Length: 195
Image (cartoon, one colour):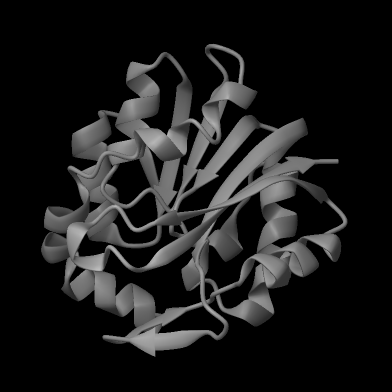
């Protein structure tokens, strides 16, 4: 079990309490306009199931996964969808989704494994499908409270995408963390399209 997974297993309720009610609608506008009504979405690293529920209510066909059993249980309860227990490195989908939503989840994939994971995400997308992902906007990776974070600056993420043969970068924006206690922390929000 990775350190980050161990953290979420042991602090699941605390995490759920602080994230379940967050309004992510501003971030949805960075992703959903690129998808047709009723499109298929994979909520990758779905956490509480908050976003899966929002997408389902908007009429999208949603599948979801998370690596933490407690998050899977929450997401099943919240979204009323089947949710798989799965690591990013275990992705086994093939051309199934119009869009993948990876909100604050890929940052726990070790940097040395990230390129491979992006290849698996591309394989899961239909041709010309879209991937939304977000990372903490920092110069260096770090660990905190037993969790490891892979981080990017805007320039570093652009350089990373250039080396990903499966994707092109469509949009990249910065935003403040929505949680009031983290108001000065910024995030990179990226939209990529499968080639």
